[in-house]
Image (tube, rainbow, N blue to C red; front, side, top):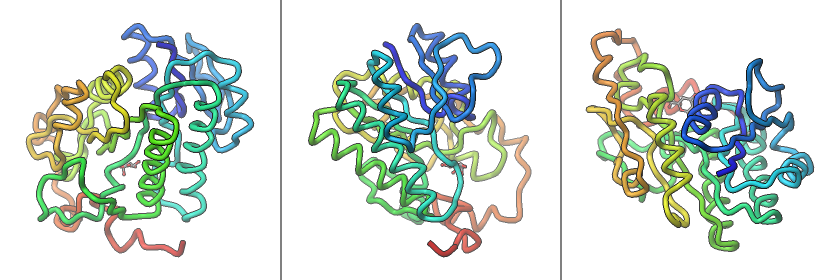
Length: 262
Ligand code: 15L
């Protein structure tokens, strides 16, 4: 497949792009910044929030799918979040319809359901939207856009609600939320190649012994995580916020220090 990866220079992009290349896919990178030295695949420098720029990229490339990883990975004002996650997704979806690109894999987030109390147990893909921040609100809205385009235009769209993508878990919460680099690649490969998923949601975490999310929706699409944060448990120091972060699945984002004016 020839796959456009947005946010190709970001932390996820720097793992996903080589993973897709290693699996035999043809990658086209897209980012605000130039291609890092040594990049061996095609690259476009453009802002995904600019519909004309996105249209020009899709006009220049013959693509089979888009993997949309670009976006500010933290809390900010509501307009910033909506631009970063919703406007970018809409620009890509419009251009995909115009150029008949049939599939999008989207880096959504656990924060779309982050305000769900932990006491409610393991979350399935049917968990109602329950954002913990404006970041989470924007991820919910971006997922809604995917759903709209699947229903209107028959695209395939897989929303991957990613936990904590890191080399290794760094906090007690991370022992539940970790997504390893290897599993991140496996997740995107499955979401790209699952036969006719329509609109689907999966939880992007490793097979963590202390996991908080149902891995079955991912398994149904062929995502079989191999790693377990528990292997690092003896390297994780307890922190002062552990108890507070365990109250909601969004952890720190659900705490009062993340409250801010819209
Ligand atoms: C995310 O979605 C964020 O992009 C990242 O900064 C972390 O907060 C991560 O979730 C997490 O929940 O650990």
